[in-house]
Amino acid sequence: MQKIKGIPVRHFDALIIGAGGGGLRAALQLASANLNVAVVSKVFPTRSHTVAAQGGINAALANVLPDDWHWHMFDTVKGSDYLGDQDAIEFMCREAPRAVYELEHFGIPFSRLKNGNIYQRKFGGQSQNFGGDQAARTCAAADRTGHAMLHSLYQKNLQAKTQFFDEYFSVDLLKNEAGGVQGALVYSIETGEPLIINAGATLLATGGVGQLFRTSTNALINTGDGLGMVLRAGIPVQDMEFFQFHPTGIAGKGMLITEGARGEGGYLVNGAGERFMERYAPNAKDLASRDVVSRAIYTEIKEGRGCGPNKDFVYLKLDHLGADIIKSRLPGIRDMCLTFLGIDPIEKPIPVYPTAHYTMGGIPTDINGRVVMPAKTSPEVCVEGLYAAGEAACVSVHGANRLGGNSLLDILVFGRAAADHMISTLKTNNYQHNLDSDSIDKAIFHFQRWHNMTSHAEAISAESIMDLRNELRRVMEEHCGVFRSKQILAEGVDKVQAIIDRMDNACIHDESKVFNTARVEAMELENLAECALATIISALYREESRGAHSRVDFPERDDKNWLKHSLYFKGENQPEYKPVRTKPLTVDSFPPKDRTY
Ligand SMILES: Cc1cc2nc3c(=O)[nH]c(=O)nc-3n(C[C@H](O)[C@H](O)[C@H](O)COP(=O)(O)OP(=O)(O)OC[C@H]3O[C@@H](n4cnc5c(N)ncnc54)[C@H](O)[C@@H]3O)c2cc1C
Image (cartoon, rainbow, N blue to C red; front, side):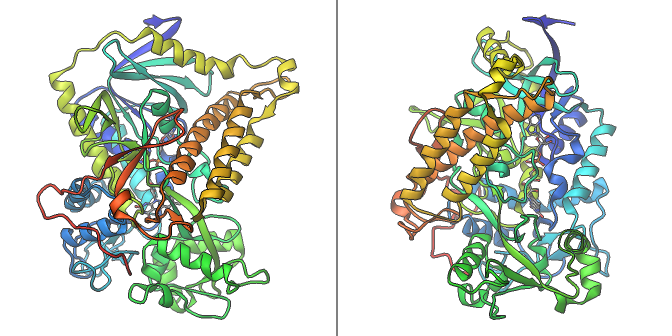
């Protein structure tokens, strides 16, 4: 086998980093076009976070109530608080029905209506007729939609002969001598051996960074590794100040109770038994957009109207729905409540509190999944050979706030679009350059930093990786949560920076053994810390309230000064900005309006 600098090299047409729904949809497209595809995942593919998605995927199929993709587009633009790029939103909403029918043909066991059509439930922020009555647009496989989707996609990939590198951790992107990206340095978690994967096109589908906050619905693996990799490669991340807090996490634990529970007719009550969402969103009530419902819950609790002895949560009531609906439509939710709370939602309400859920920001891309960089001369330039899709990317269809059911859609539509573009580029441009020697050296140096650190002397005075990670998550929760202000954010920036400085003195040495998983945890912490700094610095500088970013010192949305995307580069203490793409592909644009539900 070929080796470079002593490291074995494997060649592929395309490298996909990440085996969630985004990565697997892209891989399937590439493998079906007879390309040689490698998929690298730090966990077994079907353990990716997509497996946890509960509520469903949006498409204007009109199976339950009248619907139209234009209405879906309007809702998504409004949900994004007008920060979403309208070309990308149009593309996604138009493609949605095809994406769902494709899934159906892959064999996903969707819940069904009596007439055999796919069941669609009501979800937050969805309307008929551009802001009229509630729509029913979210296609669901009970409350296990992501599970059904990921397993089907994995099996289709096995059939298409995609080559999987399971439990390989991607350390850094590799560049070629022409300055483009051409693969990555990865690390076998089982053997500890590095491997260079040299590929004509590379797609980052590494998911979100939900581990930034202490209380989160996200898997432990969601540490923003793809974002760390692009930042180290000199590429910025976009709109990181917009992080979604889901209104209904199980109080004190963080696990998600799907919005589908409210879609089926569940509602929130405060300590006085009042259905308080009627005051905050008179029309949509409990199915207002997530940012609106999360802020309402915080406000109820802050003003002393919470439930329980400490008045520190609110209740989600489902018991009026009846056992049949709960058992058929929300079986996973019922299981979770029985297991973790000892509560049966058929009989009793569920204590809930907002919890960190979704990364709206990410790696900037165009609608073909190509990673873009701001440029002085033209609006944007593409990074040759590099693509991103899924929660790791910011295309941006979610803008300042994502609607429930739009992420499973985003990962499929843009996973496929990126793959289509990769296929056409690889057909016309299938030569490869030499890998850049400096870029390999940098990646090896980064990897060896954690590999060599085994001496006992180093361990004695060192900081523990897990302690630093926990501290980082606590700081982010306290300083960059639902409500923010200049002072709290500025203090947070200093605290995050101090944690990063302490990482220089961190060590993974534990008694006499160093496990490969400990090295992975150390590299994850580095990525998490990069994302933390990007998030809190971008939040500090955005002096307005928009979508999920809520500044008590700047409570209004300010379209005159702030209708623009932030771009954070590693090492900078202030973001740059670029315009929102307000022009859709074929229809008229939706200009910013007051956002009420
Ligand atoms: C509990 C929960 C419920 C949700 N419910 C819904 C819902 O009902 N509807 C909806 O639309 N959205 C929902 N979402 C959001 C949606 O599920 C996610 O945004 C989406 O699944 C992300 O898919 P992805 O392919 O981008 O990444 P993921 O599924 O997160 O996969 C990331 C992949 O990257 C790999 N990876 C990461 N770093 C590395 C590395 N360094 N080296 C190698 N591999 C790496 C991982 O192993 C994994 O395979 C939910 C999210 C959560 C947390």
